[in-house]
Image 1 (cartoon, helix red, strand yellow):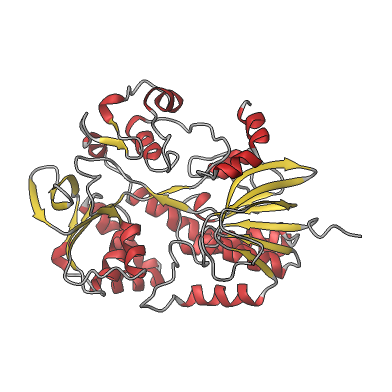
Image 2 (cartoon, rainbow, N blue to C red):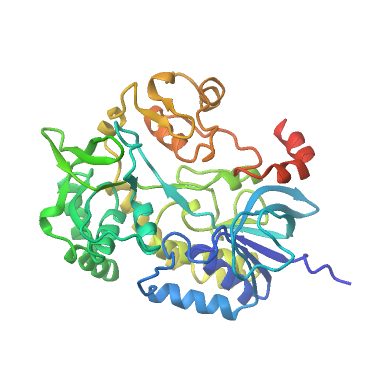
Length: 442
């Protein structure tokens, strides 16, 4: 009798790349399991909106995924992975509440799943750069304010400053302005001349240009300030003011929310744990999205931040390749290359200015989980020394916020990754403690 787990493709992540990968792999005839941390698919970019419709491309992929024979495991997090018997054994912990849960699968339960082939679609997270006052309540990520508004946060009449870098600033500003928010300023750190060249280049990308014009039309032209960035947030129990500079003069503005985001950082921890190599942009993958570990593929922003089009193209290629349909995968290479060109433009246009490395003072908290201040860290340390000597990255976020910040400030390289890659229940650690101990010693 054939083992049903043989030939199984496990997709980790259910954003645009994960959905596209799962649909393609199922279409190629593979048995597919899609693992998703959230209760619903879509990832951060296609998070379900309680008051709005989903984009057409999202709706199309949702419908195709529902029609395909895909086992969707929601509210589930892969905390460990190891190579066994020609495949990979994934340790999965349930950490949420899903109304579709099986009666035998409860919150906090742990299980293992064998995958013949794995597709990593783990996405990216926001990059935050510390400055005085950035830990005040009301100072939030750009993506976070969008998620909260989609979840029902009322921002009508709220005075909001959006600052940082990248096209997400304008997209989020437009979406929350449509909910009645008062967008006081969009402070983009990229210089005005660079932004003018970027805008002119949009003429070669009609769909993106149309979206950009739609976003910009929702916001007053007076709100846009290029070559500007936040140097401090002020308040007692919450943010009340923000100080903005253009490098020559400063001004302080009253606000109710200060939303910050300096781009995205690929989530590569699981890939590193499996043993996949990294490039300068994210997980290293070949023309068929296969990583340096045979049978493990990667797609979307964990490979490099290049937008939704690239994520869908890469996910489709990875799905077909993992499902054994290499020719069908190759037919999407051109779509991917065109989308990646857009990603390279984003990278050059929104490159971060050196002044941002000098915002934090010795008293500024850089590791929020452990309350570690910048003055407690020696720039000559390695990430490992900062963890051992000052507990940097030892808190609940496991360094996902502070480590990229300090890498940017000090040019640190990647720290090694050990299981579990997410904070886990003691019952999970007890059940898999012997294996963790053995692998942690390597």
